[in-house]
Length: 164
Image: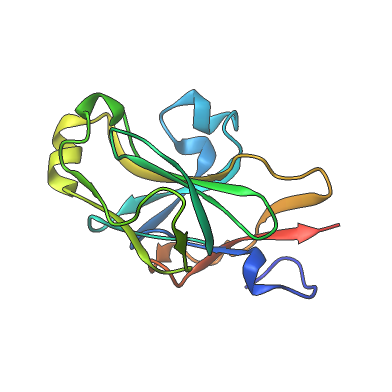
């Protein structure tokens, strides 16, 4: 199941933020994500409109449009969860935060909900993109659970951040 074996810390394991189907970052229809300009990561075709924290940490980024959340982990890397492509123009319609800025969250906690049908109709894509925006130089971001295509929100491990 895992390509690399070494001691793993729970804090370094990033789980899926959504129920749905795994998508390689290169398949995301936005070059900011597909070319890795916002960091390494993955995407999910969501099965529902619930988004869970993929890591434990502190909420450091939110937007008035309520379509993204940034969580800073105890190791000081920031995981960005971006719901949909072209969703900023919706100006928050169809989105609801379940958290507040500077709040501490636990992995698997509900952080955002959205109207999936509305997003599918109004946005370019409903993909949920998860990236590490500031991976420290002494760490490597590895996608290691490549056997899994169907993801369970807050449970299915997808990425391990490994200290070199």
